Amino acid sequence: MSEVSFDGRVAIVTGAGGGLGRAHALELARRGAKVVINDLGGDISGTNGGTAMADQVVAEITAAGGEAVSNYDSVATPEGGAAIVKTAVDAFGKVDILVNNAGNIRNAPFTDLTPEAVDALLAVHVKGAFYVTQPAFENMREHGYGRIVFTSSAAGLFGSIQQANYAAAKGAVFGLANVVALEGRPHGILANTILPAADSRMAADMNPEQFAGMPTTPAHGEPEMITAMVAYLASELNTSTHELYSIARGRYARVFMGVGQGWHVKVDEPVATPDDVAAHIDQIRNLDGYAVPGSMIEEFALVK
Ligand SMILES: NC(=O)c1ccc[n+]([C@@H]2O[C@H](COP(=O)([O-])OP(=O)(O)OC[C@H]3O[C@@H](n4cnc5c(N)ncnc54)[C@H](O)[C@@H]3O)[C@@H](O)[C@H]2O)c1
Image 1: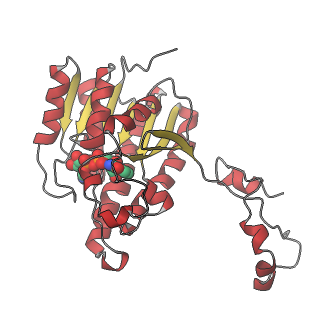
Image 2 (image 1 turned 30 degrees about the vertical axis):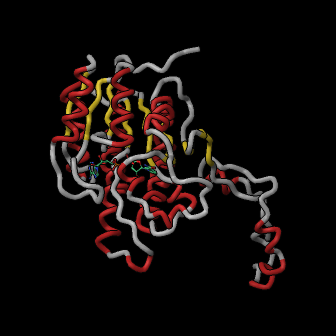
Image 3 (image 1 turned 60 degrees about the horizontal axis):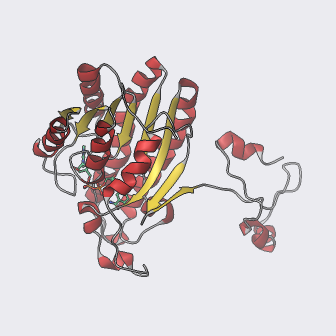
């Protein structure tokens, strides 16, 4: 069996100063990657920056014989994204791997969420992933190889109470990843998305009410559990793209977006009325024989 190796590869991990990002960066470096450790170094809401978090992880990597450099820019602006990628190119000559991991959180019931709490999360999760991936993608395209891992969340894909801003942002990350995957494939750039669950300062910030109905207390497991999947997706061994993986409580599973066979009124037939929809709602909701389209075009092509 081949082993995951990153010899000769250059990686960027955003938000790598702690939690999941730190674990990803340590593993990539341990397996030979030269790594840019990006972290704003702030608190859980994404405010108050500092250099200590990124520098600490760089120190851990270099002490273990690996290669890493710090970057303290925020992912949330085009200038920050460009500076993060420039750090990789200046230090190591290129970018092969990008793990979009930086994130912040501000939980509250839907009607209590302030515009500031919405903007702050969209800025880091969505704009952050967008603005770091854009220049990284350009560099990967130049040398015809890339592996990008986006970090979404079960909250974004399946829903989670008191996290409307977070879920909206994480859902948008999935939308972004789908297009990066489609545009990247011809250039050897593969992009996949993870839905992680692991113990970190972010997980600890959840209100117990948000876990109501779970079978046990919300001990998710070590960040390294997520890292195993991230490192595989970031490696040459991975040939999948445009896919979504959940890593929760020790279970690794593909998640997919599917469409049922539905009820079909052909375009040259009389337009359906709301009463027609009511009459066929069971057929419309039925998921038997669903398909998993690989793009918008593939979805449209299913309808003959
Ligand atoms: N822990 C979980 O169970 C869980 C579940 C679903 C998704 N996630 C996602 O996984 C990722 C990692 O989360 P974590 O649990 O390790 O939390 P964490 O708070 O430990 O890590 C997030 C890191 O991102 C950094 N960061 C925040 N804003 C930044 C910015 N503008 N620019 C650069 N860095 C910034 C923080 O300083 C922090 O080190 C996040 O995207 C999070 O949303 C985590």
